[in-house]
Image 1: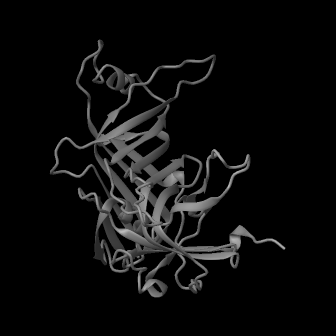
Image 2 (image 1 turned 180 degrees about the vertical axis):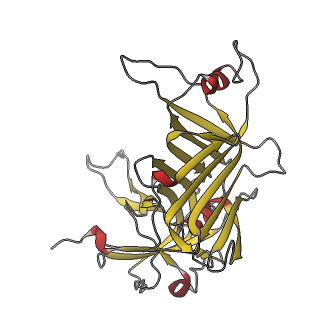
Length: 337
């Protein structure tokens, strides 16, 4: 008799106190539908090397230190997404009843601090196969992507310090995020306030946490401190002219020879549902990357193919007074879990 993966559940809650599983988890967590994913144990079996005076076989083994890490893949829904994005970036602000009564606007911006918020996570794998609580979990990586004829999808990479097996699963009936999905026909991009006819896009945020800071006398990670943040992504476009190629390779859209300066522009990614929260307001996310630089790429004509370019970019922050990016999520949920 086997266990169906689909019978499980995964819930997230922002954790106020380091080392303490969120005490209001059962009431305030958000249950998130997943395409796949779970945290797994990173642990080595410590086996002896051959010893002089010993036999030809390994003499003993012990279990080493442990950390928990894994990826969650999902269709992006706007009630659960802010919990993960707030953990990835660090700062949050909610305006209830904005832009209209019944809708709520959550603004998420990055912290300069290397200490980011913790999450408490519950996994019920296969329904009854195993039930886990994870404490002091951080969002290491955050990814969004969409194609013109597909869904807005996401992936988060999570690292946790502490795992506890055999817990009692939370009754998630009222905690599920059942809000509408977003498809590519309701996603737009602008570059420098000019509409970008992209065929697809991706956005990546990487906090570069280490998952191997083990200390003598302890099984668990001693520290989870974010290192340099990376913000980058890509979009695919069927170009109407060579302006983007020139600015990525030569420096500006009108350059004819290589220069050393890079053209930087604001990139705005806007995604919204077809369904309304209330009145004329829809669930949505708008991500603004203040300045991006396009990475050089080659023109690759082939046969009778129409020329398309998959263009990668890097997010920049020349002025510390401005955030490298910000995200505004509008949803029916009044708080971020």
